[in-house]
Image: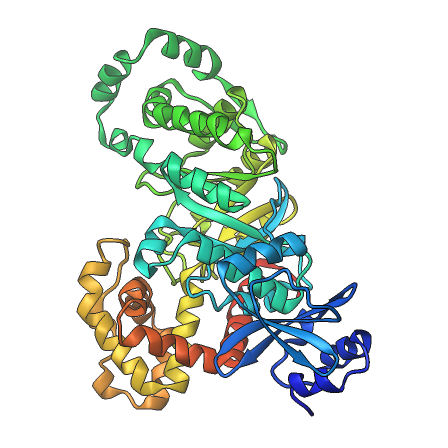
Length: 501
């Protein structure tokens, strides 16, 4: 086999060169990326630990910022995978730009915090009915990793081109709370906005006595009370399968007090920003980042009000019963979850959007339930941290010394990390490094408490001036191992959800 440069020098024409590269005849070339467009050949290569875009042309013409040279009878351009070139890529190849997926079907938010996981994600979802939202980050994640939305989107674009994935991907401005952040994500080209309404949901209402609720309700604007009472108080609604949703008088006032400000916020964001976009946007409503579980009545009320106010949503994330902690299985009564999720899925179907499950990675005990009740019409499942934990598993397998350093740093910073994430982590259940041989380190990622320890401290590890570069160096050098780990782990998610591969 010859290198790609020698292949270019020896090629008689672009067509034969493209064929040879697609057949894998040149080491370092990502064969799925090879694209021949008129008199220009585009493909990605890996040299040492870095990736480049190569353009081979018959004329001295290249749309990218690139270094030019001549090989044989061709002009060759080497382009860095930077932001300016990513913008050009999205214009030249529209399938490398994100798109909205709409209100039906199954979509997975995959949350690549490193900018390295998307190739593995693409390989995993190919051939399934799941559609990937490759670029998915919250402002909290951006702050902790010191990345930008532009970098998150660009990493997805290059991964899509590398894998030749033309079936469409999404980009989610996740859990956004501020108008300026939403607009920024949309201006960059993000195809999905998840509106976090937690700051506008009155979580304290659930703890008030009946008398306190009644007193607080009396203080609302009379016009608002009258309108909502006429629409919902003591009303019963019937869903597709005959399930009834009854808005009892006792719970009605508590429900209105909990959500009325959040509904105003949702309406404002939709009509002032989302509806003004000239392209399709997946608009997701998140009411899950609170302590108060979303009852079927709450869910129906919020959805009904959104419809009445002209707010079109692609998905809605309730606060389900139990606990959805990061990187571990569901904590709670699985039978109760099944009973309640079945109704939530019916409500979503009734109003014509997807039910969304946040912090959904590794919830293997309830994945079959999600697939059973929402698989036919669709759902959106968000993951993120589990992809980072697979990166940690790679490091534990390939560089035990580095893993030990990461583990020690995680123990040093875990108290700070707890201020960002609610977890049930018990450090007493995390095995001591001194008691483990190197060969045993990867098994720590089977321990729920060790998983949470490494999960919530990711920002401190990735931004450490010494550890951060080492993390990326190992993962780039072991690119194939990381892809395989991701394919096995995310593949297990898909199989548990009932999605064929």
